Image (cartoon, rainbow, N blue to C red; front, side, top):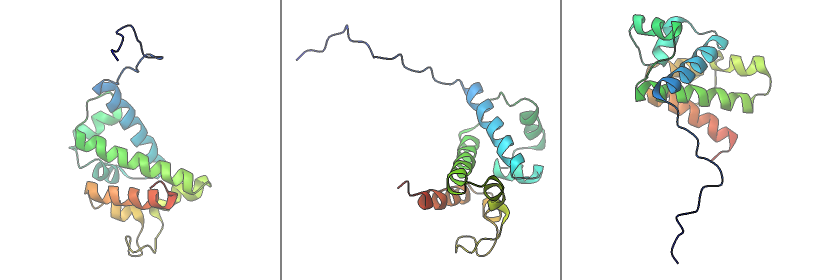
Length: 139
């Protein structure tokens, strides 16, 4: 059966974000989350993959920027960790404190999840995110 060229989508397709808009949204969210967690500038820089200090402070001053895929992936994991904690731990103070509290899970070896996240590898962020997602039962 031929397809009519007169058919239109029931709703217009969303306009994709520009690279600048995506960078701004990602960095704004990142800085809000890491401030809520009480992270230092040095810790924030590690989570972002170790950008030069001048770049880091330029991002803080004006987050409307194009980010590398690596940086966007790192921020995506941070956002996912934040979201999972908000779902798993309804108490705001406990959810915020989780990243800095010692944890008996074998992945953390009695240390805080933040210690694992600050190893500097994307894989460490991904592992923390996967652990929380598994506890949420999203798989």
